[in-house]
Length: 161
Image (cartoon, rainbow, N blue to C red; front, side, top):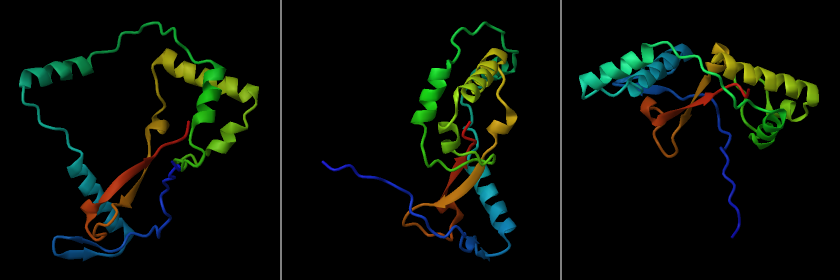
């Protein structure tokens, strides 16, 4: 049985005019960004809670300060190297524009420094805010009307680190 390779075909990255209600939006790009922003905002709303007591319990749990505890399972440079080796080679870069081949050629010293950074995140229970930001690219769904904003799906490009 032959292996099938799936790949996203490169197409024109410009978004065609969008139709919202009875109005068409073709330019400027900021109009389209606003349309997609509103579409995603409506699409990604939390589901209403059916049990108000349970919702209150969850809210109280989330607003309590975290208990500091010793974390004993830290990363080793070998584990970090293994994850770098296993990461996708052609992953699109995030806003930092760092690509995987840069990490693949790390010598021992930068690998140890990267491992120390990751272990500091675990020890401090802190994750950098910049690494939580993504570039969102709207990809049209196959065989759907490209003028309808709801026929696009978001892809988040996060930093490789």
